[in-house]
Image (cartoon, rainbow, N blue to C red; front, side, top):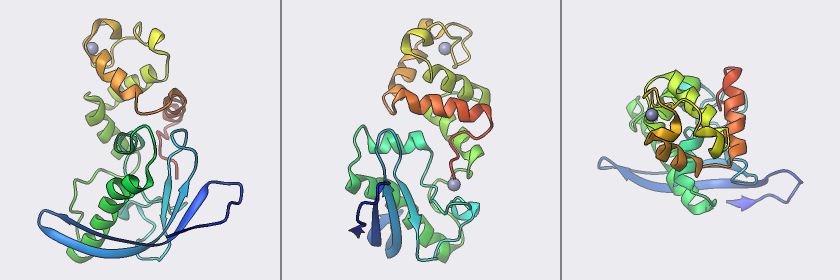
Length: 204
Ligand SMILES: [Zn+2]
Ligand SMILES: [Zn+2]
């Protein structure tokens, strides 16, 4: 892959992305044409596009139809994999390769082989229930509201875990503290705002 000359926007890497990966005893060796936009992590997530026309721009293929951006996973899950600093090689290994591996096998086997979430909104709620350790969409919204406030204000909120106590009186505060480490608070504020208009983190 090569880097496009700077144009004032995000840095852009472009070219052939070759990989070899094995999962469940099935080895896949393949290559895709990709464009990777890298803006200023951790404020903004890297965006990945397939430019060779092998992956259709549709929800079933986990691609956002409008922009063609690959749906590599929920934002907080990706941030959990990336960590506090973006290392492009580990981003490629942990976020891009699993997606492409699954895309190649889906072509030959007709089904998605890695644990697949629903696309878009529903998938985010599924994933965030799991990540936060809560049950139900309302609990996810409640946790995001708490994450969007300062830690000092958050302890006075009703706990998202459903215990009926305030966050400051429940062990769930430790989980919230861990999740806070995944992103700058601005990111949670944006998610919380997007969620009020029904677009939780589903940036196309
Ligand atoms: Zn998706
Ligand atoms: Zn609780």
